[in-house]
Image (cartoon, rainbow, N blue to C red; front, side, top):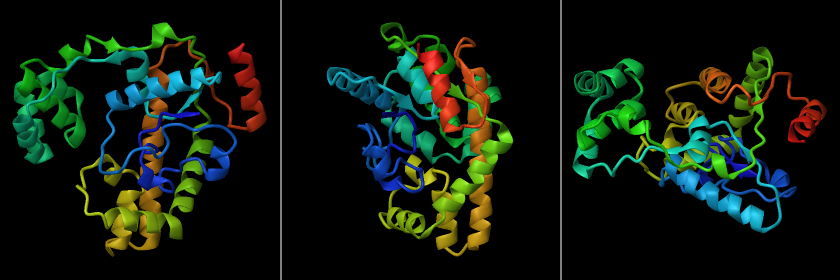
Length: 274
């Protein structure tokens, strides 16, 4: 099993990211789970390189590589490749990251109007990325993204399956999941992560669960308030994932839309895997 979830790559987030348990991992080899330190952000391009190596290692062992996870950008980067954007000038990157997101979005409206219209003004990461690219390279990010290099889609016999269970079933699972996260172990996991004094803009520090539990630890929320905030954030994220996987992958990719009963899913996998 090869991880394709952007939160589950971090060693610091076993509970909060709902990584497979040690018992799960004992059933089959697991790769790229908890293999990065929270201080080292993992980009889609870096993960794709690591995934290629993990796929090669799995094949060399005579095993079938199975990728599991919901980070669409990771999966599309691995299969379709990545835009060959040159390295960003460090001074430009530092200047962009110092800007409040509202100012960065205003600058983007002047320098890359198409990107500004496409991105939410509150989307710190994507607004900053679009602005640093156009300033450093002189070309909008969308122009670079028309070119793709390094994808493996043409080199593998892919058997995809998209899980799109009923939304009421999914949201109920989201609510239960966050209640399991907000346990003594999950709280201690976040406490330990915060104790490292890392940059709060790192992806691991911005993960769902970390923010809400951190607010609880600082006394900014009660436990019930943190629980409801985490549940709401998880449902919103699930909705965005649902929309992305409904629309972005090729229409020929099969969609499994029933509740994720193990036996029914196993039958579907057997059907589509033949």
